[in-house]
Length: 184
Length: 184
Image 1 (cartoon, rainbow over the protein chains, first blue to last red):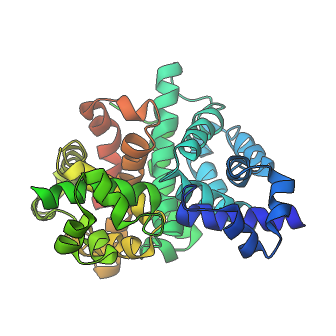
Image 2 (cartoon, each protein chain N blue to C red):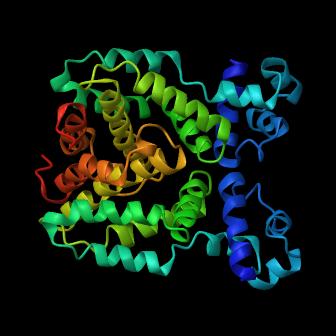
């Protein structure tokens, strides 16, 4: 798939150089295709960035399904869902590109914010009211995102090489407190 | 201070464009100085990046001092230290630049790793042995870093606008579990 190969190359370029430091020509070179083909598929650099950082539908469906887990198991379920997403051959590189690009690209940061607020936080049945629900979801995201940065992007040891079971034993109870604990 | 003005401008440029997308000329323009002056103070782009992302000594001393807090209060003390660092006029912008630049700059990621491993994780008296100590420190960092990304870099609501006291009430008990709780 040429379009998929272009998107893979684009994710790597955007993550490393941001939109300002990335050219259609460099993406084409990395994907080993003619620049005209990149324009043919994606029209402009902005559209290419948008396509490259779109969360995959399959992952959004996983997220939505995970939120239907019974509340007492939700902390562990969310954590296991994220750990398997990051090690998924298709989803992992996209999540990585989104987080790396969001650090220095305002439009990707806006997209990340929409995804976190709408998908990660929007479908949960947490808390006693809307404000409480959004706080709990935001705090869950803060732990999951920080763990993902440490483990998969910055690769800081020993968190990067703990087993999934060790991570779940250590982190899931903290997520569970955000799900249904007393937050003061 | 001309050097400080150059460093401020460099932080903003590196954070947004990475090293590859940043030129000495652009930094000089942003700082409203002659490019020759940037070379005079910092010699090369690599040295400028290094200087711009060095954690301030005052902050490193705060961190080291905070780690001497009695263990039962350590979770809240670490959190309050980080919250005040991020809102500090001098330290906040540097932390922001380091986290944003580390997303796409390998050398800054290495520096972040060294700071986290050496300063944030290295001086604590946690756990039953060295491996346990490093895990606890790494997990504490994962929550603090994720909270910082959500609150100060991505600015995702409602975490971004919760008061410091609300953040401490919600998050400190989770940090305290990483300090001295049963991690499975």
